[in-house]
Length: 100
Length: 113
Length: 135
Image 1 (cartoon, rainbow over the protein chains, first blue to last red):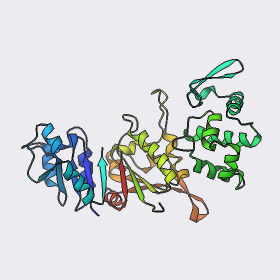
Image 2 (cartoon, helix red, strand yellow):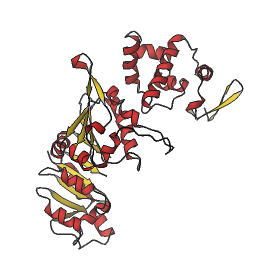
Image 3 (cartoon, rainbow over the protein chains, first blue to last red):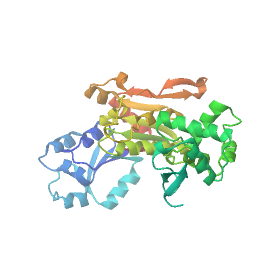
Image 4 (tube, rainbow over the protein chains, first blue to last red):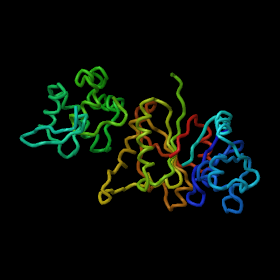
């Protein structure tokens, strides 16, 4: 019964990611998209929270990572996925919640 | 229909392209008769029961009820012989909620017939 | 089409700063026509939507708070409010709107729809839903 959570807001602007991580369960996947990808940038406070998330797979959408100059600056443990990978995540999980 | 005006007692009351009045405070019983006529409806006591009910509902909740909610509430207030789709469609052939709301001076109901 | 799914509408935004709260309410009202199993969740700033006593007159916008109290008519009987979100904001259940429904199985007795749940319980409720719509 895994759920895919998408997060599209910067963690430095909104508590969306924090709230999302507070409501995930083991086996869930969190996919960072749009400004959500800033959370996975090395050296940021939000990256520590991401790294601390246990039992949850964290992904980031490559188009959004690259567009923001974050290619190569994403912390270890975050899987970069392309659009096809996004679709795979949707089909591999039972449902999706789009955190706004 | 295009946006325009209803004529009531020599006064012009603006309505949108579907015939819903623009300012809810413009409503009056005379206006309701005018709108009803345009909809091809002769207002009887039974029509007024529904229209008055809609106005009271809107006053309390600030929304026009969906048809299912309207039917249920009419049933509760006036009994099962009136609280059913058939009866309400006989009164308002083009959709009870939509047509009756227009006559009652309410906005178009959210997502309903 | 006879499949009834469990829908959960998740509300996380304060009522007036953005259009999310009103949009969510509209979707809930429209969605109610499809006779699914619908529940609402309020967490984070979303709990402010249920803080009673709005007066929007000086704001010049419509007060849509009374519409929440109509949701019982739309067969919405489960309104989950997250305890941690209330507490962080200095609120308790007493500060919230009264939301009721009539219980068909109990001679139409009026019952409260509001259920205060913990963060952990809410996470579970999300998992147990078939469709989660987040606002």
